[in-house]
Length: 404
Image (cartoon, rainbow, N blue to C red):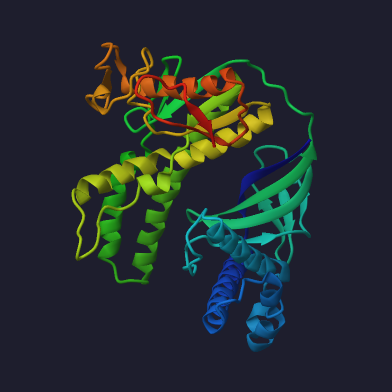
């Protein structure tokens, strides 16, 4: 089977290369915003107009004639900006993301080369069109054939992500066990075998320091040299928070995928769960401050990234990831199957009002998540990688499981 995998390294460019990379990222951002504005104009004039990459790509030569400085950027990088806009529209129409928005300077500064790059691992350097050979911190080998290279700016440093493709043998799982996982805030993950993983709370640990640096930045004159230095300090803290969270999730998911052939999680809609409770002027929300703190804690856990990593790592290891409906998982008794809201007295404690069974609420949720898939398999049903298995509430049992 073919495996696509990306390897990221920190670049060590010289001054001239840094200036060029900043210009290229700005040009790609300019083309993206210009294409988005033009597409909106076309749609306003004719509601039947659909997004067309080819139609926008044909505008690039005209834009280069009108703006000669655009010719300094690699043509492939500008074309990839339009490809990114096309992907943003596809994600919107498939309800995976919001409508595409204009890019701001300092956010997602990157550009991509689909071809023309070469890698010299022996000398720790990579060749990038119009930039030449750029040195990088070589921490591991890059196997396979290079498919594309992305250069990005984050935390006041430049990084290169090299995506490769290679043939690998179809993997077989090292384990035959199945486990249900219930994610939360007090406990990041509670497993059906009784074990649990404590949360990292990366943002919470750096919150006071970040607030202090942000206050200092707010007192500086905007876009002054001191303001830019303060802004760089804020970005470094954000970069540290993201790196800590990413490292925690990678270590956790790798350990889970190596030890379990079947992993069952809840099909959570994190976007809906972390929606603001502010409301409107006519209909203001309630408990806005409390809900804001809850939203911050939810987003600090990285549940969506946790699921994404589990899915592709299980695929690499020959295992399977299944998502079940989260409804009633923490209100159903795993001993007698009785479903009631009163079963969960507090956030942490579960006590069945029917049979008196008591346990941790997160552990009960993990057991019910595992039982949902077992019930489908016992009834002769099939589960597929990444497909949610939905369950209907019952008064006395959880056995009535419906396929998604």
